[in-house]
Length: 522
Image (cartoon, rainbow, N blue to C red; front, side, top):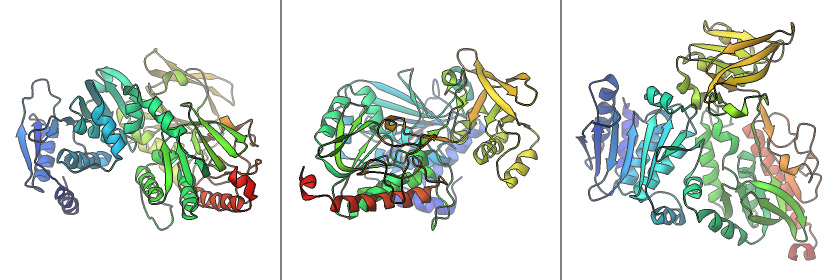
């Protein structure tokens, strides 16, 4: 189950346990139960502070296990085998249950501990989902810190009947006290904002109290992180506000072209970016969406969706991009009900089912190849008359027996029964004929759209909504710079975004030092 190298690493981590950890296993005679017991025994062997006992299986998910510590009141359970991306969640849970202090701000710990009420969270994840660990780890931490909070992390692929009954069609999916709470990546701050009624007002108050920044960066992806590092190293007051730190990188499964880093994963890189920024004197404001940029006497004001606002003498826009939608009838109605955008995250939920992939570029063909190994049949639909993916990918795709490729096909509608997707309608662009395809899932892979709608009346954008910049990253508004996927820069790559963020930051610093003294003091 665990190789020698992993056991050695685990042993090193578990040496940090401060108090004993009790594992209560709920298992049967099935193969997965035997695998779980093998995993738990291997974990127990790495620390004399860990013990295992068997619990009453009546009413329990099989297989599952709970973590607790003597004298503590912790309600934290894993249903299934938390391997893959969730193995880190298991290790962190063991450490936190074992008394090792979490690496989060004290204010967040206090907010969790002071929360009143009873909250039973259930999170459905897949082992291949790179977004799920953030949710699982956040709720595990909350369960460790507050006895009124219970969390059960459930492998959706293992509990397929349950997933079907609760109509879980994307991960992570979160239920609170039996009702749908949310889906997609969330951190502890975002979860608390939804259940702690005073959290939003307190966050707005804290943001409004921020002093003006010399450089205010909007967006926390590779471009924004690089800009923050370069600005903070200049010794100027630097702030970075982001809807989610890491941006689109968080949705990237495998990264193999970041120079000097042969291989990494998106969430891992996002954590490294944030850790690097935090090494400097830069203020990070997470979980906030910018909605307005305006000039003021002292520079610029950025208003946030929460109602709070921040000011800066200069601004760097690095808002990135998001998945492009088809914008056809039915699509919006069935997002997370069969319409998905992340094959790595949600693919396991469609095991044995018929699905479609929209898009014949590299991302679409790669998604179809990956999904073909899980589902019963893949229909790939491409608007153009030919696929645009690399030849090596096309050859692999065409070799798969359970894939149908449709070119010159325009998707015109997503159909469903009100609860989930049942099919799609497409038009043959050559013959004009309209066809219906019965299926249970649709993965949209047609590129990205820049997050710039809120800027259209503020500065110059091109016809695709990208911010127009010059060779320094300057926009049409003096003092406002932009970098990364939200700009006209070609080749939307992580390494290019990092370089652009660095360049924009240096340009912003140059702009600041050339300002007349009276403007700096304004």
